[in-house]
Length: 337
Image 1 (cartoon, rainbow, N blue to C red):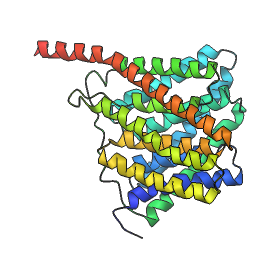
Image 2: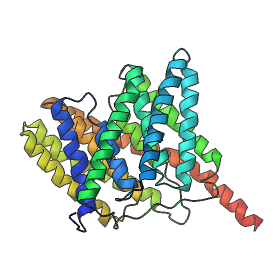
Image 3: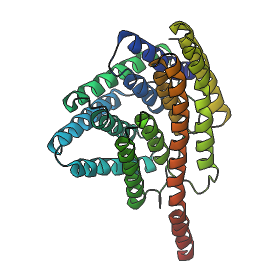
Image 4: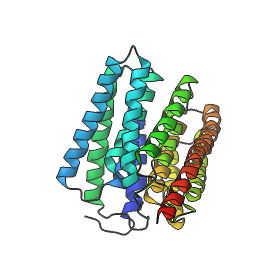
């Protein structure tokens, strides 16, 4: 309807934030889920998706959500069994994302596994209600995204597309290593009852799903710097909310900061997955800011900054451990030639 070159930026900023504030205002039990799904959909599917893709997404989410719960119930007495099941699903998702980092199926699967595990194992939310809550949030995000794409058509052209890769990164062993590391991190966060488990886990998982490209030596460095700097855009919102500013002021400032974050990512020549990670973190942090009041908002705000820093450090460490294997295989390939 309204065609403009700024439509992609308006959608990625306004849709998740407005949806977040609305769900928070009406008292939704988990208001952050739908906005996070909206970010994923806006950054992965085209503005005019085929109906076949839409139905495929719905079926995938139904399958992942209810199968996870089914296995959680079957393996409730054996935590090891549930852990092995999640490990296998995560490894499969990483293997898919190495070949196509923009693969919506692997992205949704990773997010659903993390959310379902954290909500059921740490928040003690009834496991029977998890799939319905996740599916309702996804359907709300899907309908909102499709409506936004109809009103504001246009795809983001200023963000670099991630490249898939063959060879070492598409090898199953790399996906297995990343999945093992991710499961250990998630188990440790749940064991210590970290209040930022979901934020840290999603950040690390998003970093690990990206392939390492040997011809992009600054790729890993860029994802670290861009992600670390991106969290600073939530500080004004934290201070305003902490000082008791009205909700409409906080929302307006959040929207303004979101636009600045999008411009920052474009100036940094961010890749598509980094762009998605920036707004996923921006949405989650904004939610955690507005759910606290006064001094709690300040203390929890600084805890989030520390948590993101820890997540980036852990993700960088895991990626660094993969480099020696990557270089070893490359050298063997050259000798074979």
